[in-house]
Length: 207
Image (cartoon, rainbow, N blue to C red):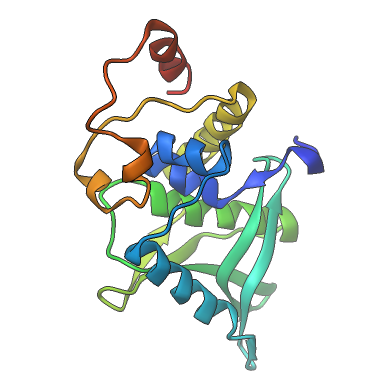
C-alpha cells in the first residue's frame, strides 16, 4: 500500500503505455507542449467536466469525479461515472472521453481500468465494465475489466512508480505515432543516436 505522498497521476499510466519517454518528459521532467490535437483533447475534457451532475430514479451521472487508489499508488479524476441502481446498491460505470479514435495499444483501456480499480477500492464494490467515448466517430467502446486487463494495469502502475523512483527518461524509439506527438520537436526521435549501455540497462529494468 502506498501513502498519500506517494500517489502519482492516474493519467500517467496512459502516457506510459503510449510512450515511456513521453511519460517521463511530462511527469518526471515536468514539460508540456501543446499542438492542435492536445488542444482539442483538452477542450473536450473541459466541456465534459463542466457538465455538473445528473440524477434520475435508476441512474446518476457524476462528472469530474475525484479518484484515488492506495493499492496502485495513483490519483486523478474520472471524466464521467454513471451509477446504475441495482437491488444491492449503485453500480459504477466509468466513461473516459478521448478526442481521436481507438488505439491499437492498451493505453486507453488501462487508464479506464485504473479508474475502475480506484472506484472499487473507494466504494468497496465490483466494477465490471466501463466505456471509452471517442470523439472522432462519436461512439462508445465498451471495455470489460477482466483479469488480464487488471493485471496489465497493476503492472503498469508498478512500472510507473519505478520510473519515478529512478528519475529516468528513456531514449526515444521512433514510430508512426511520433508524427502526431506534441513533443516531437524536443524529443527528437529521429535524430538521437544509439542507446548507451546504462540507458539500455534502465530500459530493460522498466519493461
